[in-house]
Length: 451
Image (cartoon, rainbow, N blue to C red; front, side, top):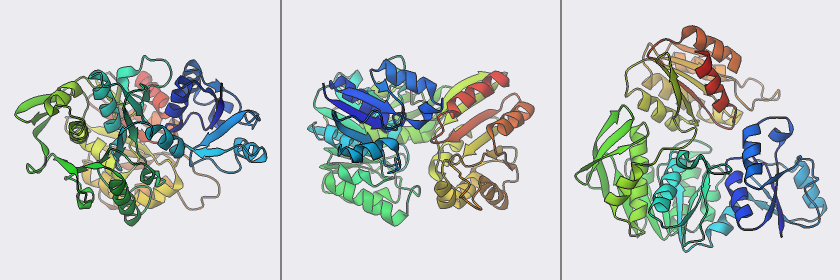
């Protein structure tokens, strides 16, 4: 049995690949610094349950019989596994390259791109194709609520059919590596890099795709051209796939499509847009759009994507992966569709993110929140002592300067918890937003118990 090692085993992008390679018959080893210091215990156990051998991240997993070491773009040369692999001349493969290798084995590859919504759309595609017995392989960054009882982390579906659906990441430019049968462009907005660079990435992605799906509601995405494409919109009836009458419901959102009313078990008009992207892409596979829309009514969503953790004392808590201006605005707008005050907490994940999108984020937050709503920023998750002058408090000051006075800098989770316990009241919706920090899910559960 061939042995491979994954460094950064807990990662959202790495973990589905690990689990799929186990199912392909490999002996898979995983290392992660967070495991070594006692963090992410649930994910560690889930991966072990899926057949991955979890070992310390000290280079000991890199033996002469290792076929290759797989790393994400975040893994540095100083990583002990990387150093040992270089000493032994063991090949090192980026996560995106292994994803490309798997993806290219399927004749009908669907690559889902976009600054926001790609995780949910990828999951929707996988759920629809699996439910309709099309036997897909799906590789995603988020865990599907529909499959949360399966062994391991449910961020993949594995079949050896002819369709593979992947989440294609623009943050590191790897979206340009794939050559899909259908490429989806949900939207293009400011996030990890400059808009000029993003437009180049997505233009290249479109060129590499045999067919393309484009969101007409996004001005940047609508600039992308192709000879074989389909469009979708929640605003323009001229689109190939168009919906109207979007309405919030007590359990999600409903919409009218081709003369029929459908319901999604998720909050937000943005999820209707994700559903339309799925319907559009599935049409290239010969799936009837109405059947696709009906099937999506059974989709339960993604863990940490505006995920309802629970309600207690008429206070509801949500956990959300939102971490850029457009995602944060979409989530807050979804909650503003309902009555009640919002108490929102956002934890920027990196110093670069805070600098790159902080001003735009402050403007979006000030625009959408009402006077009674509360905005809390915790200190940047990956801040180091070398990041002089960089702090979440800078964003708070910009929010206030943009007109929303009810914004506060509370550096730690303990500070946030104390504030919420002392200030939350009946009817409030509390949303905890941030990326990279896997402990935010447990933090939400702690809040639910404490209120």
